[in-house]
Amino acid sequence: MHKASFFAVEGVDGSGKSGMVAGIVAHLADSGAPAIATREPGGTPQGEKIRSLLLSGADHAWDQQSELLMMTAARVEHVRRIILPTLERGISVVSDRYVGSTIAYQGAGRGMSESYIRHLHKEAVGDVWPDLVVILDLDPEIGLARSRQRLSAGAIDEGRFETLDLDFHRRIRQSFLDQAAKTPARHVVIDALGTPDEVRARAIDAIEMWRAARK
Image (cartoon, rainbow, N blue to C red):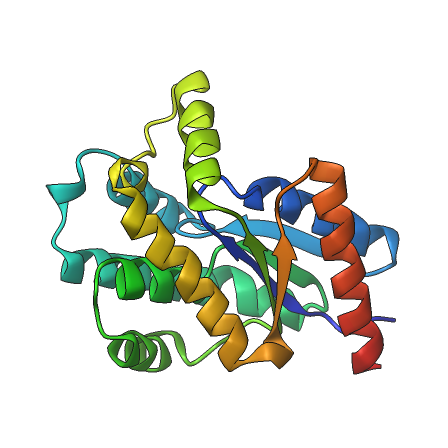
């Protein structure tokens, strides 16, 4: 029987996170380790309401401090109502984004202090971190084109961050790579260029190597 684990999938917009989360959940279930998929901001009714506020409209709709606090508020609900109770039941959790995205977007992207973001996370959320973070690494120019096309095709009003310039998204990509370099035991970086099946296979191989090392 496998121990329940908390996985987060991170990356620039358009890197394929949602599909990867579904693929990881299916793989874990097939291997006898039940898991759920969730997302941030979101995961709870409260978090989904915050998501609709944060991801829609013009970029100037929120001050960066308000943006950070709302992201954190959604995460408090997510951790306390979904993530921790699920892990306590012996079921793994695979989240589409977590605090790594806050460090990347509100930290590197917006220019807010990473130490402040980490302190806020510790105090408000309880310093809960994923067991493993899967970073899907992709050129932001490619990712933005994919993401904008998906939003347009689906008439999805969640493109607030996609309105920001390429330099913003390049800072985000670099932040994810820096996070992985700081704590390599908790991160795997996956080349997200290729077909969905190719990228998923790379990630699953990395996860299986990590699980084997934990036994």
